Amino acid sequence: MNGTTNTSCTTAHRTREAAVVLSAGVLVTSLGVAPASAQPLTCGTTITVSTYLTVDLIDCTGDGIVIGAPNITLDLQGHLIDGDGLTQGDGVDNSGGHDRVTIRNGRIQEFSEGVGLENAERNTVTNLSVSYNEFSGIELSDSDRNVVQRNVAHHNSEGIGLGQALNGNGSDRNTVDDNWVHDNENEGIALENGAERNEVTDSVAFANGFGILVDSEGSTHNRIERNFANSNTQQGIYVGEVTTFVRRNSANLNVDYGITAPFGAVDGGGNKARGNGNPAQCENVICT
Image 1 (spheres, rainbow, N blue to C red):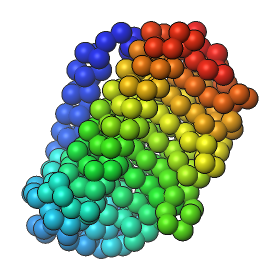
Image 2 (cartoon, helix red, strand yellow):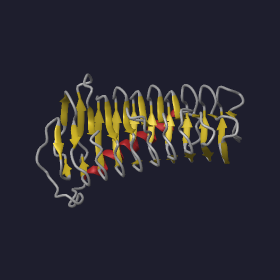
Image 3 (cartoon, rainbow, N blue to C red):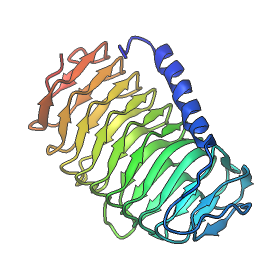
Image 4 (cartoon, helix red, strand yellow):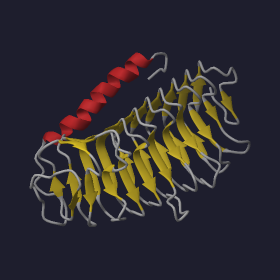
């Protein structure tokens, strides 16, 4: 990716989003520890065994699917979970804090949050397209050691967010890898409110407000590496916390800086930026 135009990003994104949905067409024969269920689901169903979706769920007025047990998988099999655009529910709700849950392979749209985890550990959220949600496409609150990988998050307020719950605990030691986030109103990927020791790697963030943001409110020792952040309306990568490690990112054609960090931030080298609105291109990291 050379960052000179959005056309290649958009074309590649469409291919990526199609792959996210089409990859779900393979029948899953084993979905985890619990027995798998193929019973037709309705909006608001709470699942306690591994389950694969067999129909679209349309115009849900609350939650789409509620996770009700640990050690299970929800496989959407390419289907859509759709809210009514008014509800305060989540497309997939794991606010119960169930661990070792996998959520994969489908589309989620028009909820408060597409996927919401709270006080949940070792979940995997993968191969989803999450869009047109009021707040986050995927939100982790007080949730540690989860993997958010190979998702497309677009046209949300925030694409992928890691933050704190009402108890004040942040989301730590999560892996956010190989995601595409675009056309989100605020941040493509955000680490906020005490999100510590997370990794954001190999992701593409374009046409958001901020492409990738690490705030200064206790979000320490995070790693931002090998990402592309192009054509965002503010900054490609904004780092507010001095302990953040920034390495081998590319940030082009953003309205302000390509990459900005506080003085003393950990510059791992290999960052690149050009064509950004601020002629300095980067602040407190070296960009070529």
